[in-house]
Length: 225
Image 1 (cartoon, helix red, strand yellow):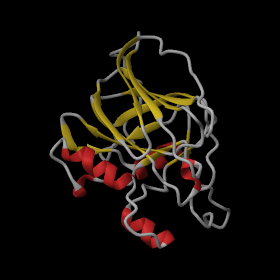
Image 2 (image 1 turned 180 degrees about the vertical axis):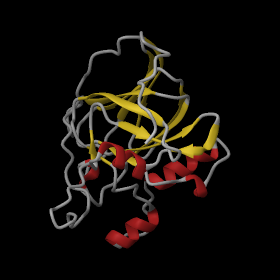
Image 3 (image 1 turned 60 degrees about the vertical axis):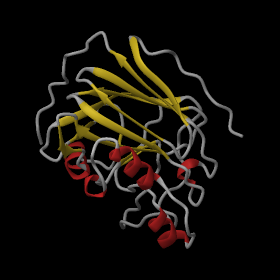
Image 4 (image 1 turned 120 degrees about the vertical axis):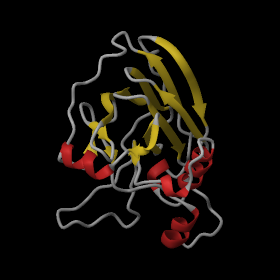
């Protein structure tokens, strides 16, 4: 078993603090200016992420806008997650890992069969569907998601690794801090994957915390794409 790491408490009033087991999900509205921290407690644990405007779920995370503005496919501190109408949703303001994936998407029972010929093995897509159902949403609302702590290398000729995901770079206790640039519904699916290395072939819990930043209410100033 990988040894779980520790991380300092957030510098603000904690609103919510949860440990999410592998294969489970987490969802809540993060208010504009609040901070969202995701901690990879044991290292090498892929964490799938989706977000939607809290007052209009038709506006949601948009991978293409995010990559176009960042001009890269691996994101870290200072990069912004944009919506489909090119508004900033979250800004990565702290990151001890340094690489997060924009292109690999989420695993699912169908994709597990497609890629690994295993049956009845659910993944993050099924977790997302369960979370979305709480808010009156469903399959039509799932888009290409963001993957924290996941490593999807792309070769100079555009090729991917045989398993797409390879071992993550995160260490026990690594975390990412996100500042909400709008009131946003955030969804976390803690990956249960054992068929590729995106969860180190040994899925472990993560910790998710919302807190009020001392600068709560002040946006990043990033404009639309």
